[in-house]
Image (cartoon, rainbow, N blue to C red; front, top):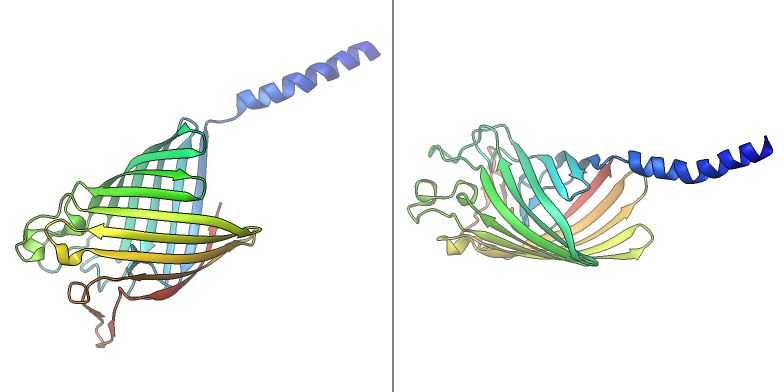
Length: 256
């Protein structure tokens, strides 16, 4: 009997891990929720420098394919005639061609329900394809517009033509400076085809700390956008804000 029990124990030692490994699902799901003092997209406030609530869901397959949705409140002063919400839908494929180097290719669709540019009827909705790579602390990504750049074309942009083929280069670096504490640097360059005055560079320096219950973040964000090309946004009360200048963004987020 002792020999039989020993044999069973030995078999369990080897079979249980093998069974657990075999039963592991290739599918993974996650969600995220953020409350922030401002929503900056490529350096420019999308919320009239007001607080925002954001959240989304992601699906990933062990093969490298992924799909996701991310949503944020936006300002009705900047995205007119709609629901004051941005909904992003994306999918792509990540793979590791060499050790420590991760490549990423995909497509991203920005959707603004009901919103249109003034009385032109043109939609802000926007589609980009992207290719990126990350190596240890560093990352790079290029996004290319396959549609007009957030609805900018002859009808909405004063006759300069369409803006398909616009692009954005995103360079970043993130370093762990203490336990669960990260320091990040970002610089980006936006090019808008046929609308050169809209080209600009943006930057961000950020610090985040994971406290377990949530991650707290602090970032300094700004651009060198031409004030004439990106005029101040004015609300109904006559209050004017420069949504392109340097500002501080405080956030609290949770991934689950």
